[in-house]
Length: 118
Image (tube, rainbow, N blue to C red; front, side, top):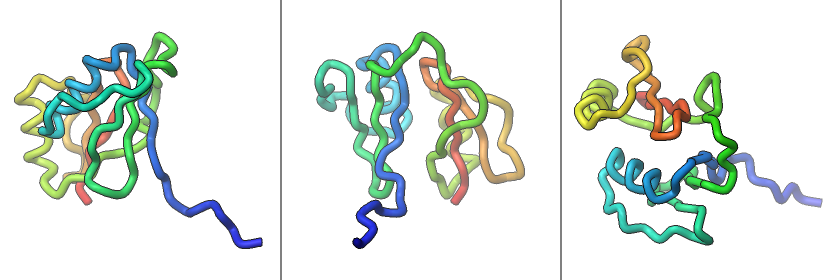
C-alpha cells in the first residue's frame, strides 16, 4: 500500500484565551483585515501565504501558555525590519535578534513565537 501521509506540516494550532482578540492581534502583526470569520465559536484561520497553515483555537486553551521553545517560526527576509515593526506596535519581544537570524516574541496569551530569516 502506498503511504498516504504526506511529509509536511499542514497546520499549526495555537491555543488562545480569547478568539476575537487573538484574531485582531494576528491580523495586526501580519497586516490583513481583522474581519475574518470565526468558525464554531472558537477557531480562526489567518490567511497565510501558502505552505503551512495556522489555526488559532480558543477551545484548546488550558489557562496557561505553552512554555519553553517556540513550536514553529514565521519566515521573514528582513529580520531587522520585522523586529522593528513588532517593537513599534507594542508586541512583547523576548530578547534581541540572535545571530542575525531569529528572535522570539509572545502573543497576547503568552505563547512563545519566533520569526526567522529564511
